[in-house]
Image (cartoon, rainbow, N blue to C red; front, top):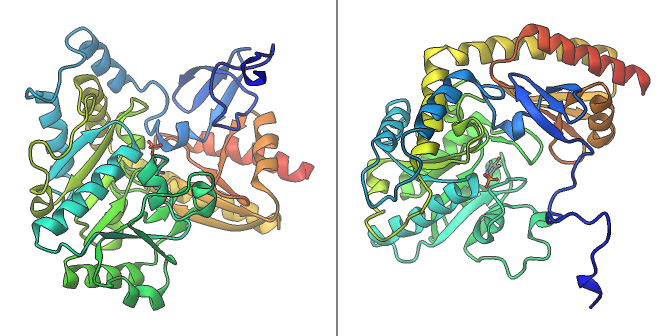
Length: 395
Ligand SMILES: *Cc1c(COP(=O)(O)O)cnc(C)c1O
């Protein structure tokens, strides 16, 4: 059979990513090194994950200690560090209880499950649907790809999981369609990360929240990318004057250690009882240590203050650049989740910047996505700006 023949070049890793031609072998702070010893300014942060930069010392020290103590026990026992992280997250948010898992998609799976269960527990048997929004991204599992309202993510995977209804983002006209008698929850990002760095309109969001409260529809915010300081507050929802019923976290929570969490208000959290949901690895001591030391350090070291100052500095520099280079159409985003809408395809800029030893991402076809670590400095921003100028000059 031809598909069993191996070629010389074939990788043993499945081809699910269009990989850049770069082997990264080491990281520290805002920089990574390739196998040839070349240094790159990493403004991707492992896709908004290494929020404290690479190998941050407080997390490294905590993990080393935990490595010598206990790696894993099941959730059939109490795990003190899990309690500690849950407490830290709930004390610093308007949510009351946490469920732990291993990724963003799993956190959203937990949110989707609790929304369905909540409606049933309220006696609303007919409420089984979840509304999500165009250009959203909620994950790659069978159910979260269905929650993701992007045609290209669904392609090849039909029939997709039913129970999702997609509406346009930031559209006041569709607010009346939120409740069709079947809706149990809305799930949305406040800055659409993968979908083009689009910010939710505050007035629209307030209206959406009002409808949700009136109809007992859960307001669920996917903070997998925006959470853990990325937008300048510990959670992005704090900047929008809303009180969500559920939020989901993952990317920045463990400084690169796989972890996810779904936080809910008490009245919603009550719907998860023994046997309704679980995860073998979720909440294990290593992941909890990574999460706890990351969040505690962000709070103790005033990292949020740096995000706001640096974001302002970065945006000023980008605005200056935009005024000289018409190739930059628009500067978008919040905190250190920034997007540059370019006249031409983002991929060309990603390649050209890599040749200048700077790593960035895209969000859709034309948006360059800039995700520096929250600890980045003005000097590093200047380094980025110089490299970008070089690239723009060569265009
Ligand atoms: C990355 C991301 C996810 C999926 O997270 P995984 O850890 O890759 O499963 C979900 N929602 C948002 C907003 C994301 O950015």
